[in-house]
Amino acid sequence: MLALNFVKQLGQIRLDVDLRLPASGIIAIFGRSGAGKTSFINIVSGLSKPDEGHIAFGEHVLCDTWQGIHLPPEKRRIGYVFQDARLFPHYTVKGNLLYGNHGKPDPELFSEVVQLLDISHLLTRYPASLSGGEKQRVAIGRALLSQPDMLLMDEPLASLDLPRKQELMPYLESLAKSVSIPVLYVSHSLDEILRLADHMVVLEQGKVIGNGALTDVWASSVMRPWLSAREQSSVLQLKVSEHHPSYPLTQLCIGPDLPLWVSRVRRPAGDMVRVRIHANDISVTRIKPAQTSIRNVLPAIVEGIEPHQYHADIVVIRLAIGTSILTANITPWAADELNLQVGDKLYAQIKGVSLSQQDLA
Ligand SMILES: Nc1ncnc2c1ncn2[C@@H]1O[C@H](COP(=O)(O)OP(=O)(O)OP(=O)(O)O)[C@@H](O)[C@H]1O
Image (cartoon, rainbow, N blue to C red; front, side, top):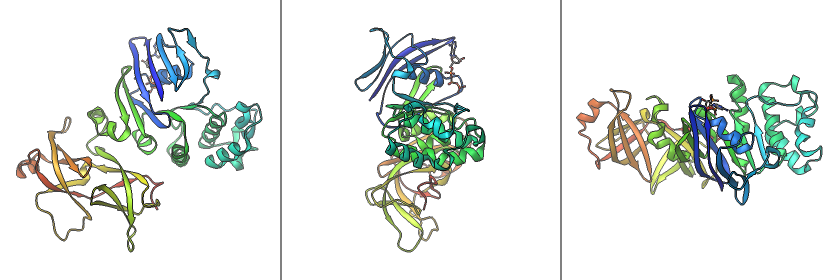
């Protein structure tokens, strides 16, 4: 477990953090510009000192202002990937990768990292001849080869144009699936976070206003101001049940005896996949429709009904389906005509389910 408890005055803003974070997986640090994200990870890395605080990874205390402990960055066993790759221009890619190991890495780890990031063909090249995405892959490789206990990534895609972002994303997705250390990943891109993170921390004006599993934070009211009506969605982690024998479809399990059919995924039964269901893609009906083209018509119970905070033409319905909660956007007219009440039993028709590109067959 990563225990972070510190305060630091940053001009007008007081950064005030008290968190216990998981010991592995990608932990997104999200918030507006100026919320304190970079200051937060600079304190974890040791580049900056808190006014007061205690930071420990398991038994390893990195900082304790009361005991006078403040390990310098190089003693913290932390890998850091910045927005710009910051490679040494006079070293080849291989030289850059070996920098943190005094030229002698574990050969097995070296080939694993080179393979993960697909950089074997770049090893003899110099940074000046690499694209922005390739440079970032090398920077990530260098950080991993230093065998850190923790990785900090501060907007690693921010300086790249869209095609380069798309080029790097599959490597980050592979990294996300393979890391066994915590990765603190600063970003203000919700798309990136949805594709990569397991856990999410939301900062506002230096304070932690959201912290937990990504699916829980995503469903919480904390995220409302960031999502337009079109982007409002539920994010669920569901188990693969089976693949359709005739059609390119896969059945996921959204609850006991509740199948959710999605485009075919490339994972075997039993694996978990993350899906996103937009609130605008769910409609509700009191009677189970017969002979509909929509494959996913599921029994649901109304858990909540509230007007949309920012859109007068939308009513947000929270639906319990199996063990999941989904939100649906409907018009106030439809809500009145259906005379919806909390506790009502309905059918939810789900028109679309998005999956990550990596999960699709
Ligand atoms: N050493 C400092 N002295 C005074 N103010 C500071 C200091 N460092 C940061 N700040 C202020 O603290 C706030 C948080 O800055 P920080 O860079 O951590 O935010 P951020 O969330 O990473 O923003 P961005 O997304 O724009 O990078 C900003 O208002 C910044 O101006």
